Image (cartoon, rainbow, N blue to C red; front, side):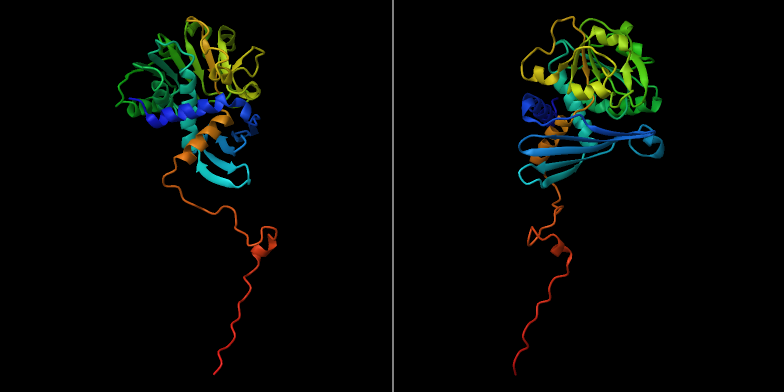
Length: 326
């Protein structure tokens, strides 16, 4: 069954990519610490400015906190005033999955029915359901080094009309898959997917890359792939291609019909997804247009004289009344 709201998010994000030239874009600003990263992700068109505050702290779950937490702000460009502040922890998960689904509309082969998940953490359920909105998935093969994460995924997806196959290794999970999604939180250089695991026609959805020095694929995989990225200047900093001089295609070229998502039946396509602010802009605008139970809060003070800010801190002037005459 198609999740209508999820499908709308896919459509909104792709519509933003189709308007690629309308946006003022830049790589996100990242401040790295020994234990994590904090990032600001801005983007704007002529009407709305969006910015997301987001962290990535892999050790947080051991302290009872989430690895990723985020807040978003949407502002009116004409006045500079914010029109919405939103949580974006869940919204980021939704828009990341929606972006994967958007690419899955164009790049995998039409006969894609088997999904392999490498990593069954926070993104796994969202990725499965979003991609399932674009491809008729029948089987999901999944693997994680954390048995609790495997059990969590199996429990959450147990009521879905899918054959769930827990696997003992990455190679076993990938074997026979049409589409592979890799999303892990471990920092550093990994070789989770190797050339020996590739087969003609495979689509790889590499979601975990989110900082310099972190890769999930064996570098030898890249030359075999047709590589699609969101925004090349950012992906060169923190994606699978960060150490590579290989040529890539930005997804907006596909969204705008400048080239096909799949160039041949046997091509191996790789979506090197690091998350881009344009997707947050689309998600925040989608949320703003569909608000139901929002709380109105005056974030900007209302001034009697907008040129006299100091007066706003002064006590009100007493009003005196003339005493009544007897």
